[in-house]
Image (cartoon, rainbow, N blue to C red; front, side, top):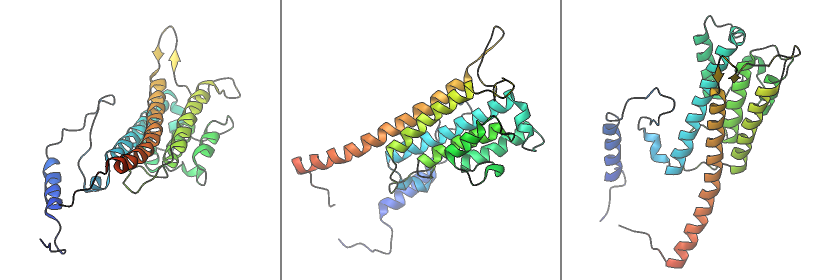
Length: 245
């Protein structure tokens, strides 16, 4: 049977219709940061494998974790958000969220990248918005490790070693945040708190979630490449023909 090449295949039209219909049936966004959540179906997902979707969702959750860290650090260190020039902490958080999602550094650090931004943010002599620089530096570093992308498609090829190194950098950043002091002997930034009156380890949990997701993606990248080779060999061994109709 001959097909009219000017018309899209029937299955493409069917899938497109299902995507449009399913968009109305998705559950609403759940504001609980610890609960699993999905995103609206979009046409670009036709260019994503299951693995691409996994890495995309992991990146989305990493950027969300960084936004929560930004807010927590601003609330623990109010002098920092006031350096942004924004009138309220909410406006400062929104400004930081845009920097995180775009991977851009603060304007005063334009021209620096990933670990360079982190190095400045954790330098005791730095007088700018240390919270914004620290979190934006981590966002830039994580996005750079994913080849500068936040959504991933069939054509994308990521380097497992770069993602693994990003996880180690987050570990280092968390340790420096907890240990590095200002010239006066006070912490550069107040974060985790353990005292007789209060215990707050929420920062540690966010760092742990970041590290866990990055390590998982690094392991999956190695496994994905290994499975490609195994599947090819299996095809040769068992002579798996491909369907033609």
